[in-house]
Length: 165
Image 1 (cartoon, rainbow, N blue to C red):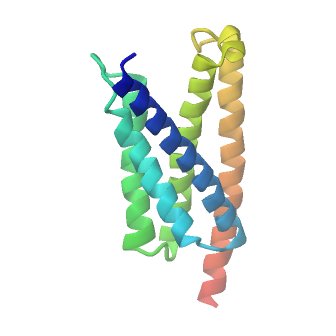
Image 2: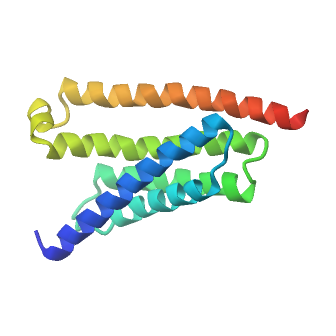
């Protein structure tokens, strides 16, 4: 692997991990009813950068990672509009929460896939990522995000109701 590709991989990975970490802080803020504008900006910027830098890797054909990146960028466009264009007011707050969680889940989904591809012990369990351990891991992550999403939506609805009073 060339030095440039190694550097791109390191930068892409660091940005991805920063996006996931800041996204978790943003979710924590949602639960506490605190918008955390700086953390939100970091989360959105790094999550966008994650998807964009993914397209800088050499490729000959469309890969699943490109599809995930395109979906993520489309979701993030809506999230940006909901958060900054509509200031997450009213139903736009719920659109923001759902979209932010979806974007974060997509990054975590890819993280799990990369862990199974790169960590020898996990790779041995699911070398083609079609084996049950991989599916179970991704299903558990999805389940966690669904539960968190439902709870976040409930807390957002309650916050909207409090604002209306």
